Length: 94
Image (cartoon, rainbow, N blue to C red):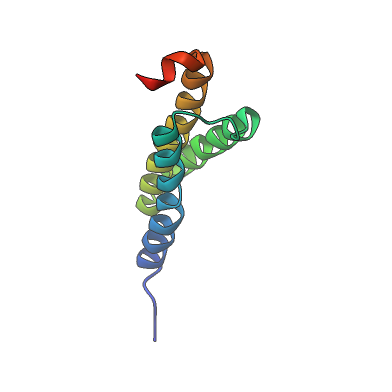
């Protein structure tokens, strides 16, 4: 049984990219990202950006789509972390 390589890539991309959705949802719902590491998400986001650039260079749609979506999700977590850290505790109920 032969497996289409692009299909395998798309399936892997869906799994790894969708794994970030619960994290984004949790941070948004709790209005806190206290347990999230700034360093890890910054380095991770840069790495995903580089993977996106790589995917564009080799014209690989599974790599391009997966990393574009993952980059957006990771930057959402990082952006919410920075935003919620700046909001005073009394303002979080808004």
